[in-house]
Image 1 (cartoon, rainbow, N blue to C red):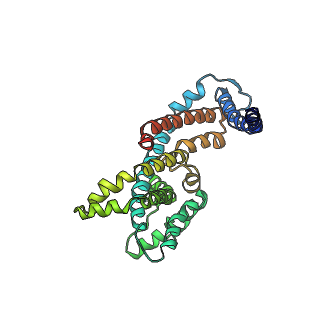
Image 2: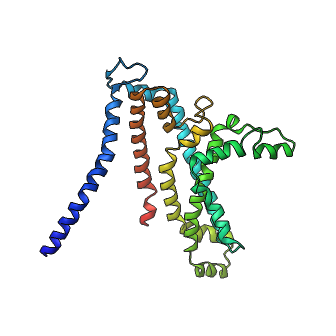
Image 3: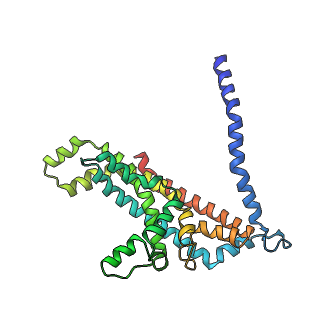
Length: 291
C-alpha cells in the first residue's frame, strides 16, 4: 500500500513541471491579450497610451468590417462542411468498391490533406485559377468561353473551393474507415429482402456513418473558424472585405493597421465566439457520440 502511495506521489511530482509549463504556455498569452484589449496601444501613435476601458471592444464590434467578417466566417465554415461531408460520403462509397490500383487511388485522393495551406493556395492561385495561364482559363478558351478571373469575380467562392479541396480528403478518410466497418451480412440480408441501393443507403449506411460524420464536423469546425493562409496568399481579404474572415480581420488590425489594442479586443471576441460554437457543437452534435 505504501509502495503504491509513493508511486503515485512520484508520478505526480514528475508530471508537475510539464503541467506547470503547459498552464503558463496557455495562460500567459491569454492574460496579455486581455491586458492589451483594455489599453490604448497603437504603434502609429505610441504617445497615446493608457487605459481604454471598453472602447476597443466597442470599436471592433461596431465596425462594419466585423459584420462582413463574421458573415464570411459562417459562410466559409458551413459551405466547406457541406461540401466535405457530402463529397466525403460519395468518395468513401466509391473507394469502398474494388477497383484496380485501389491503394494508389486512395493515396492520390488523400494526398491534398498533407499539402501545407500556403502551398495549396499558391497552386490554386497560379496553376488553376490564373485567368491568363491557369488550367481553368485554358479549358474555358478551348471550349470557346472567356476565361474567368476567379479570385476577382468570385473571391469567397474561390476560397471555399480551395479550403474544401484541402479538407475533403480528411472527411473521405474518416468516412471510408467507417464504411469498412459496416457489417456486410446486414447489407446482404437487406438486399435479399428486396432493399435497393437508396434504401440501403438511407436506412443502413447513413445511420452507420452518424458518428463518423459527427467527428468530421467537430474537427473541421475547429480549424475552419481560423482559416487564414489561403486568404492571405490569394485575395488578401479583398476585394474590399469580400473574403475577410474574423481571423484575417484581427491580423489586419494588428499587423497592417498597427492597432494592438483593437486587435487584442478582436482576439478576445474570437475566443468567446469559438467557445460558444464549441459548446453548441458538443451539446448538440456530440450526443451522437454517446448514442
